[in-house]
Length: 229
Image (cartoon, rainbow, N blue to C red):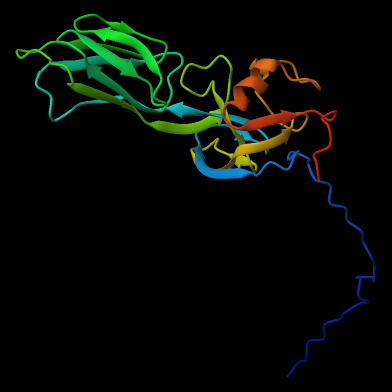
C-alpha cells in the first residue's frame, strides 16, 4: 500500500486586533414618537431616507342598495390631486349630488347629466328610468396602490410626500415589501427627495416641508433648538 503524504505549511493566519466605528446616518432628528408601517415599493432602487408617495389605484363605483333612482355613474377618471379612499356622493334632489372627499371635506356638487371635472375625480352621473330622490347615494373607492419616489410633478397620488423609506429597497425587478416611517422628526440633510422638490441644499424648498407636515412628518435643520429634556 502506498501512503500519500500531504505537506502542511505554516499557518498564514496571524493574531490581530481591529476596531470598527458605527456612524449613524442621523436620519432621525427628534424625540417625537416614530410611527412606522408596511407597504410595497412599486418601482426603483431607493436608499434609506427616500421620500415616498402612495400611488392610487383604479377607481371603483358602487350604488347604494337602497337607492330609489336607477341611474348610473360612469366615465370615472382620476384628477391631478386624487387621494386614496372612499368618495361619497349623496343626492339632494333628482338632479343634484353633494360630493365628499375621503377625509370628509366637501367638494363641488355634481349635476346629473353633466360631466363632473374636479381636482380629485372626473365622472358623469346618468339618470335612469326612475328619478333619483334625496338620500340616494354612490360611492367611488380609489384604492391605495404602491409607494414610489414622490415627485412634485406626479398626478397619480404620489405627488403627496407621505412616507420616508426606512431601509434600502430594490424594486427594479418588481414590487417588493418595504418598511416606512409615517410620522416623526427627520434631519432635512439626510432625506433623499426627488429633484422635482428643489435643489439639494441645507434648506429644503418650503413646499416639501409643508407637504410632509400634514402627514405628521417634520423636517428639522441642524440649527433647530435642542429638544427639551
